Image (cartoon, rainbow, N blue to C red; front, side, top):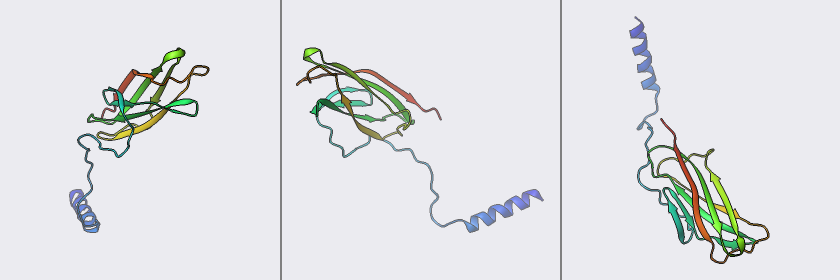
Amino acid sequence: MAQDRISAEIDERRAAAASGDPITRSTPTGMAQGSEECGQQVVVSGDVTVFKPRPERGSLTVPLSITNSGKERAFYLVEVRITGPGGFDATVRVDTGAVGLYPGTSWPTELIVKDPGKPLPKTPVVSIVKNVKRELQS
């Protein structure tokens, strides 16, 4: 009796359902192809690309892009160090802990770098000092 009731309920739901193909979860594949223009690449480490810094109002703006090339949603912690003549030495970080990236997506951003009292380097040296990727386990 209970099985008949369940079968009848399933038939009712099918009849009431909207027409068309059901929506299912699909995972993007391949590398994201963003339209952002970040400039000349200066360092690449795993899913992280740092582009040539540019001076802006007493600081350096450092474009950076993270592209999740994995198969799971991922969170990143990245630290970028900028050095130059005259003692310029600054480290900035980006943490995607609140916005994990889905596979095949990218997140371009810009980091603002300052070292008070030090002259901005015309040819800064850029390095990635920390690049931690944590994949969400399903």
